[in-house]
Amino acid sequence: MKVYVVGTADTKGVELVYAKDCAIAAGADAVLVDVGTRPGKSVADVTAEEVAARHPGGASAVLGNDDRGAAITAMSEALTGYLLSRDDIGAVLGLGGSGNTALVTAAMRALPVGVPKLMVSTVASGNVASYVGPSDIAMMYSVVDVAGLNAISRQVIGNAAHAAAGMAKNRVVASAADKPGLGLTMFGVTTECVTQVREALERDYETFVFHATGVGGQSMEKLVDSGFFAGIIDVTTTEVADYLVGGVLPCTDDRFGAMMRTRIPALVSVGALDMVNFGSRESVPAKFSERKFHVHNAQVTLMRTTPEENRAFGEWIAERLNRCEGPVRFLLPLGGVSAIDAPGQPFHDPLADAALFDAIRATFRAGPQRKLVELPHHINSPEFAAALVANFREIAKAA
Image (tube, rainbow, N blue to C red; front, side, top):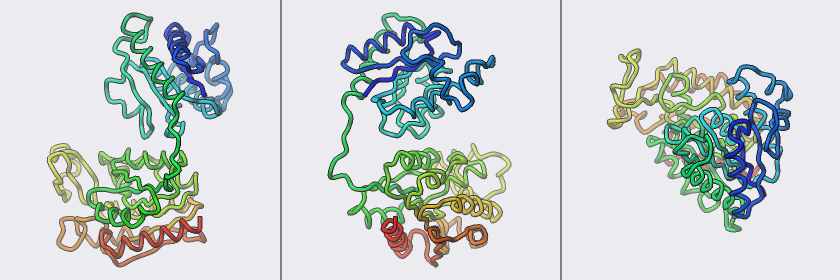
């Protein structure tokens, strides 16, 4: 397995060669990959032309582009194709500034979780969410710019190369005692439900609970795409509400995409679709000033969703589940979708819930692998948790 050292050799050639040499000195095989968008003589083992050829439009779509931003985006797509074609990646080490960081980390995110990824970057000291996303990319701040070798850059780049070499040479092996993985989504207001389900299934599965904070759902689906899970129980789909209404914890348009791609056994519900999340009360956009709110704490304000919004949620989710060809069960808790959506609670709103359920009934298409199950229970009730467990065991057995 090799350390793939990636960067723009037209401007960072000395630094990249140094990183490669350090990795080799640490005992790893190393390959230098050039992703520069200006072709020419290169010190790389894999030239920019070779990488660019992996672009769907061919090398000319990358190297013949005078727009630097467009060229970087195209090279990133080509690098993704190149890395995904390799079967000898022990680690990927990237070096560069903001442009190269965006280029290389986009390709890194396409690799499965567990493949070591380390990015030495001038922007690693700031908000790196857009670079890391739901992946396991390690960001190392370069301290000084990646612009020549000096006492600081040699130390930082050398440390990174040694780390990448160590990861490539010392892979973590799966334990024979590992159980099949099971992903679950949870919010504070669905904790009681998920806890009951987890406790009922953890004898047979290793459970991984993801806080439905936008990146939480993305992380679960990244692991689905990486083949980590035998199934998922996606109880808490509240990220859809934030995505469609404009909250601070949104999913992306690819929500449920991993289910479509992998056909994994999946149980889905509508947990916490009664709310959209904002920060402090003062942070809520003025256009929502007349809405119903519940202040969860000083940093979290919840806004009750309307019947119209719930109708949109139901249609959006059901339409995506209709594209899933694996075993899917969509369970509806007709007694309420969160801890604060129950009789006597601040977000109890039967009309809004009915709009959600009616939209799902009208949009969802049942099939041999896809079923809608309606239950008269609240989402946090023992009866609903038991139904989740029974339905998951059914689809997992059939998979």
